[in-house]
Image (tube, rainbow over the protein chains, first blue to last red):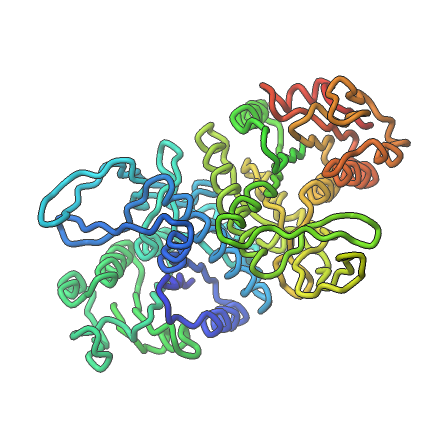
Length: 267
Length: 267
């Protein structure tokens, strides 16, 4: 069992990724796919006159401020355009993909963080009416029922709060929770860079291997979005996933290349 | 087993509909929900500068011309906003809803009609690059697996073509195909009128009952969108569904009222 996270940034080659998922499925490998939505949600927000607002926590993590209007845009991009057309793309390659978000069948559950502390112009303040959260529980039974019947679940990065609100969640950490809940062997995180770079954006500074004992320390190298990926990797390994690979999603056979050890291998 | 179609036009009270679905689910009734998308897709198209284009066939029927850009908008409205937030609404009421479109797991399959003959300024021409079609096959096994586990499937009106393209389909006729494939007892079609009206829009001219032998003739009374609903009813009855009810979706307990015989009952 492999969980594959396809980043939401530009540059990832979906033709190559989809073809490789089809190849894995033909080999009889059980696969769960999680995708991002960042770029598409940003572009849609711009077009609709409600551009995305990113905020920074006191700990230095950036995230999307998701009021209800932003949540609607995020849902249209994530569950609508990206999810449906990724499923369509996989179906064309003979993969019996089935699109879900964490809201469906309470696939991904977590607490809604409706008030978040942010840093703006060097000062802390609280933002309310935020529809974000973190995945705490996975409905592994639902995924199991689908995987048993040879469907390939394609999951959009939303969860449902304990009160039943749809919430925006980080896709990398959600993929880590899914990988942990399913007892996946590997979590492959595809991005538009070759892996974790010692000196971002110098691609020749790729860190080829990180011992899982030291994964948390590697967060010091992680730039921007990569911080959450390192956090996801840490969480997946803590949940018993054998190996996490940060791999290049721009190349041919990106998943097979990752499984062959290309990228940043953490185990 | 009941299949409920919630129309995509304005006026339907989703609070009442969702509360009634929750009541049915608590009574142990198996329910499949299908929703429309027309209004929301039109509104989104306007906002994005790509308004819906309706075309007229040589036979005088109008339909939505769905080029790829329109399909994207339709998918964002149908699978994104409407489907996800209907699932959220049901989840808040304790219904374990799960959103799908016909693309997911090849739930609804049919032939894509990629070339359509239209009349424009009195002249016939062929439009290509249309993403529409009609549901011909239902993956009843997938719905069965979910219903067995007490999920309530909530289905968006898209299908997948035999070549793997996502296609826009009529929701009423899709709901009829689902009802037939599942051997549903009843198909309840909720709209923003009390049922089929002998003299539209005079609501006092409601036709309370139609014998299923004569349902096809009743298409003469059907105005605009109602024509496809009558066609759907005809198809559902031909597939063995015992009863179809066109019912008012604006009122409290709209489904229970329909089951009690309010609306246009066809059996």
